[in-house]
Image (cartoon, rainbow, N blue to C red):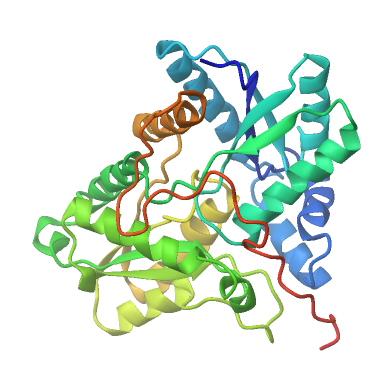
Length: 343
């Protein structure tokens, strides 16, 4: 069953785990992007509040442990390796380790469920760059498809949304608005991908699973990092919360649907910044959990692996768009054109 692949590779974003790593990490993240130095230092200050520690690596370790147990239970005997885009363990180091272990072909699960340059094409480019660094002995790496509309991804998110709603007073529960959040990206990047369409599909599917009418939820954005003069996706979550407050809303649920774990952009941008806005305007905000290591999410990853190693396996998806392709088109999610910093 597993003769085509000798390993599973988890590919993630990475994050610092001590203060002295923060600036080098952020320089890796922002390399080649027109982001002002003051923005880098502003984000570094966010990490400083947490001693330079990002929970994303520990969350990735927990996911790998849960997936390994899930695979063992279903008799999938493949080792799991882990490499990051921006911080240790870096992809090139991991691919070298895989090559030394005799791995010739691996199946990669990227911890990003939606299309777009940052969530799709950039990871493919990073994998190929890492392979080039390793050389001829580097394993071939095939990426698992996007999973924004997989029924188990929808179900895991729906359970967490339902849990958040149960924290709302019963009298307000059936009317309180839901703000689904995702990482804002430049409009130029959004125009060349299905990022927004896929997010809207996930929001629709999760809301329907919980019985939420379309008029009660809105997709909003967070974690913008670009220059003020460049148009990015809006509305911003904090602006949206202020609008709700001015409309007399007293309770709201915020769900980071565009993220897979409660990492720095969730715990700072939502649990700190957005929560501060809510305190200021007197709005009670309940923040729903990300899928993390929810058993249904882990089961989804195992199903996606089985799709690729078992001939004829069903490729499950909900909604009108069906399952994403296994192999991305060569022109999918292109890098947006760079503009001079001095514009």
